[in-house]
Amino acid sequence: MQYIFVLTLKAENSNLQIDDGTVGDWRYSWAGNQIIAITQGSNTVNQNRSSTFDELITARKLGLLVDTLSFCSDLTVSTKIEYVLYKVHPSNKVGIKNPSLSFSTLFSQVRSQKILHRGESSDDCPVRINMGVSHSFNSEKLELTKYLLKFFARIRFINTKLKLLNYWRRGFDLYELPYKEESFLACFKILEYFKGCYQKGNNKLIDKRIKLVKAKTKKDALRIGGGVNLLNVDKFLVRLLGDAIVVRNRYDIAHMRIRPLPNSRNEALYFTYYDQIWDLNDDLLELTRFFILKYYGVTGIGLKSDGGLLRLYLT
Image (cartoon, rainbow, N blue to C red; front, top):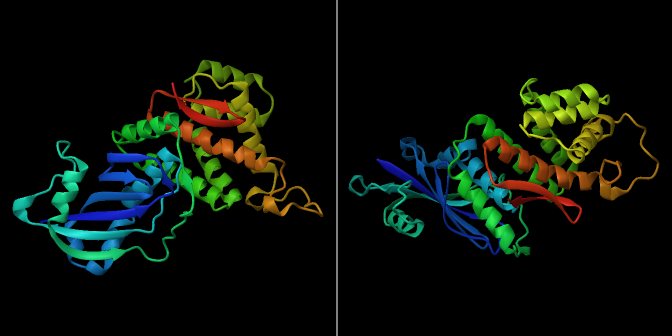
């Protein structure tokens, strides 16, 4: 027997429109602030319908869908969902991955089947988006987002790729909430992973520079770049990564209060009093996004400074 979930999710409103997208086991469409997504259910969903939502809230199901859509679009996607579970008659098998079926045709086929269960996520899954906000992307931003979503349709997601994607989405959401210290730490976890990927001998130029520089922060910055397999880690990246390492290790991020707290603090900085730290956080979000794309093997993407902030662009 075949079982199929149809989910309705909300996202920040924008002029982005995806008529037919694929990622992992999902097919989806996206228009304005509404996303409709379709995926296969296992044969166990009919045994305990009160826990059908449990099958969806895994890293490879709802996690992958929400993380991917946020990562590629720079938009917050809510995990507060409504869903319908359909039972497909054996004579009407539906091919979710069938490329000859458009999303609208697939959606119509699924909706013609028997409804087994309707439900929604619990209040533990917050909306997390401001319904009053609307984004108007320019043509360059729309082209970049669609390019990334199209590339992600071809990626085979192993555990490490899922974790990196999830850490980035956490950092993105936390920054928007705003829990900026926690956002910084999520980004830094990504940097730590790539530092661990560095292997001496893969890039002789980076190996030589690591020997020549004296500051440990610069050595670690070069190791991060080497772990991402960048051909060249320029001075700007070394400085930016070095600043992130200094903030993580010497200031009160993650409650490591090595310096005494000043008597007067700007409450807008929350627990941190490192000058311009949140400008650094903006750059880290875009930089770690670029690093993850390089790790995934995405080509045709560059990183440049635009108005003082880093941003991705199509090369």
